[in-house]
Length: 150
Image (tube, rainbow, N blue to C red; front, side, top):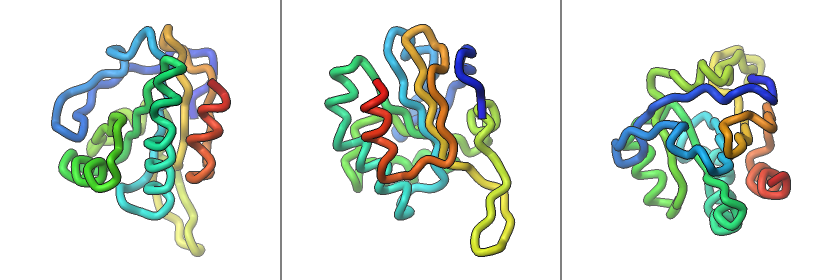
């Protein structure tokens, strides 16, 4: 996990429509950047729907929500459509941002050890500095917790 107080690494990834988006284009806004493991899984869906439900509140605080996973553009498009997600979902099939933000880690599930994305959320200020970093967040609580911090 990256430390607070440092400049957030920039990246360029395709969104759910295939358009390339960069973190730097959101300068001047607060960014809630969250990494999750997979579209349409129970926890990830709860987290995404939670962010969607609070999206207007984030906008009032001059903040944008960006979700990143290894899923394809097509998967993100279907996920966003199915749940009416109004925020940016980025496809990181090559693990570019996932590695930059140090969220690819060893995970244990029912005694089995695998590598995967650890659910992590960063808050980045208007100047591109990481102000908060949270690893192993609780999916259902994460959206409201991040809104409260802003």
